[in-house]
Image (cartoon, rainbow, N blue to C red; front, side, top):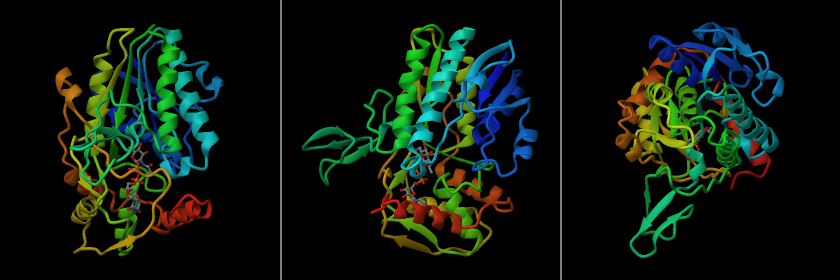
Length: 354
Ligand code: UD1
């Protein structure tokens, strides 16, 4: 089968494409080769194991003239920076919501399944269980409340524009598909692995840690470092996505799947794992007393549904995934640590930090 991967030249798309090709599928990418992500667009194109068509998913013209034998659409293309989304509001809506609606309309028109990548950002702060107040979503009722892993049926409570666009994109896909073809939505937690963009200061904390370690700078941790994240290695995500391609649900019964490791790791533990992967003795941590608008405290996936379906479960621990990323990215070109200082300063300038 030929699979159309939007955003296929990106980090996740490259891993998935290699896996799909190894399993006997053909792949074609539709990708805008955004300079913020692709410092060397030619290298991204060369790495993709199939043709790369250059186009923006939110642009109707990009969907004309695609090969006639596409057997399924995997929609990965998105704007992904939580902080940046807070001021590039229109662009994030245009690409993430408009692009997903267009991908769904295309899948429906062609009569083929759609697998659409969403994000755990739709859950926002997620659920908290409290002996006094019961379970609440989106807000921690009191100090006694403990965060609980997010389940696919939990309510959407996004706190960033990015999360909001991903929630709206899910609704747009559902509506555009209208039960006509199979639809799978996957909500990854924080994805990490070699090959992720090291030039884009909006790709998350680990690229920042890598840049700081390479310059011998202390790692800047925002707040006390006890925030938690669920780190999923890109290879584990690619395995799950490839499985989802080969196991589409019945049309009219859309399926939502979490993707994560199912475990919480604190930011301080992530910093230690990054140091463990670096060819240096150790590194200091500096705490910055700052909160970025759109940031959440805790995130973790409930993997119960994946288990019940017999879907592949993650093999990488967060520690090993982070260390693998740092080890294999150490010699790769990337932005200097000041790019992350600049990104934070930009948020502060716009009144998006406190
Ligand atoms: C990330 C992704 C997002 C994805 C989501 C899924 C970004 C940049 N990345 O969001 O696309 O959908 O996971 O869960 O949006 N921090 C530091 N020091 C730094 C940078 C960040 O301490 O130099 C902290 C942040 O305050 C935050 C944590 O690290 O508490 C994680 O931040 P980050 O990786 O930027 O974003 P996520 O919100 O996890």
